[in-house]
Image (cartoon, rainbow, N blue to C red; front, top):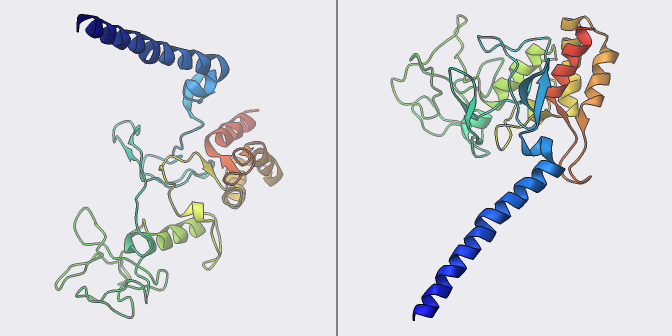
Length: 263
């Protein structure tokens, strides 16, 4: 009995040292030696200071949340950030279903309801700009109303149309077309109006970058050829050559633009 107990205790100690300590140290050492940049967060520096990670997307907006024209804009994000610093505290997607009005709006034949919350063949909140409008209430929070009830009060614009939830795909598409001077019916890249699965995607599609290029070039006083050249040099291919699609890293592209402008 004593011999078996000592053997068991000895095995626990040995396995703890080998697998708990030795294995962890070995992997850490290999990571630092072979993949030091990635192991330490893939930080990107500017002027000798860390300004972000090439693996994590970040916004390029002013203090009011408006896009800064001289910078390329990243994908929208559902990740939770701290209000004081803007640091990401929780990564995650919205997990909204394909018929959820918070994602696609009120689409006739799919999920439209009347003013009492009953199924309807038309969207009573539709406006000329957004036929799929999801209204918001009149409270300070301006929460989207996906389940209307009798007597519900909705926020309205000066022209009498309903104020729509700005986070639906139709509203994001309208804002994107307006920001980059596209026609009202122009198709937009899907990554321009949806968030990534993690909410932290650092890249945008090549099509998205090319649409933004003229606005950025004009804001910086650069030629369009110069900006598109920087897009190409900051484009990454498919993982392992077959997984995913090529993408443009927004952070490294914007840093390259700053360096170009400062020359």
